[in-house]
Image 1 (tube, one colour):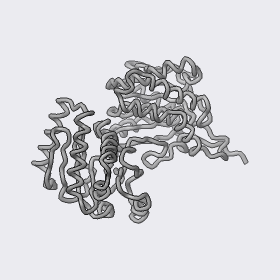
Image 2 (spheres, helix red, strand yellow; image 1 turned 120 degrees about the horizontal axis):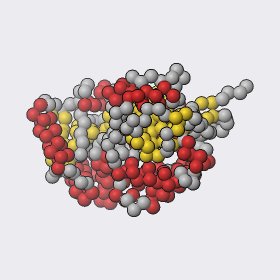
Image 3 (cartoon, one colour; image 1 turned 90 degrees about the vertical axis):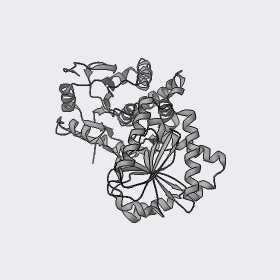
Image 4 (cartoon, helix red, strand yellow; image 1 turned 90 degrees about the horizontal axis):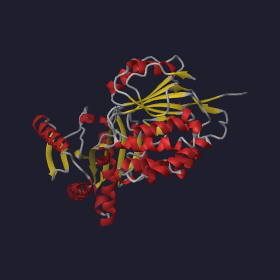
Length: 399
């Protein structure tokens, strides 16, 4: 146990200033019970219904889901598997609940954790930290394994923790990750980086038009969760929609108009976001020769149809309900433009076997996950192509 030295401008939201490296077996019963209790406590909060991302976190932590993760993640032969020690988490500035998932990764793999939350204050962070602090009165041992901090400028602190931790989990843009990498790790430590990624969505127009009204309503609500809940800031939120099938025009009109109704009921677009969104639309129309046409659905949704794909496809990004779209005959048409930036493909109207064959046949450099519409934000222990369960643990081999 050592005292952290460089504490200028460091605010401890959870935990104290003592640095402790504690490692236990993955999916330790105490940790699993703690997360189950966290789920219950978050659901009791009067504010949870105001923040869908906090509600989603509570759902993720529920007992049945943690038990399922344990079942699929643990190999019975790995009886001597332990956490690496101490994990330093640097989480992104634009996703309020990401820090909690990163912490859960660290805890379930048996590690102690120092988690840096965004310097910008989010109510979601306060709600989650309040519940954690309350539960740590019961789970006293876990006080050694959880420290949640906020700071803006303190390079000496980042340097100190980087030199002492066993691993860093770095979430953020490419520049942010490179800046953190300037702080040297000790020789046996590792970096696990979750960099800036790009995601898109594929919709089968014919299948969409066959949906009952109630099923279509559920589909657009799921798409809303993938995108508007996080203002399209998540690396797994789609920016580009590719349309397949013979009835694309009719399907687009139905889908976007139905989604616009949902957005009008649920989404609060700020004046600043509204102005920025409109300004970006004007800039694209005036400057990008690849723009074929555009359409607005009140101020809720803007869509730009692209004439063709190009090598900079991952640069077509939107926020606050700004989407790009393109018509294709089959998914093979996008393969030449998929690069390592591509993370998630969400889909509707395709069989799993078709998608498996698409990946195997084309041997793509990018696309790490393929999930139905509505599951874009469902984070798991396989993320960005990493098997986090294995990377954040070590095995003692005895012959």
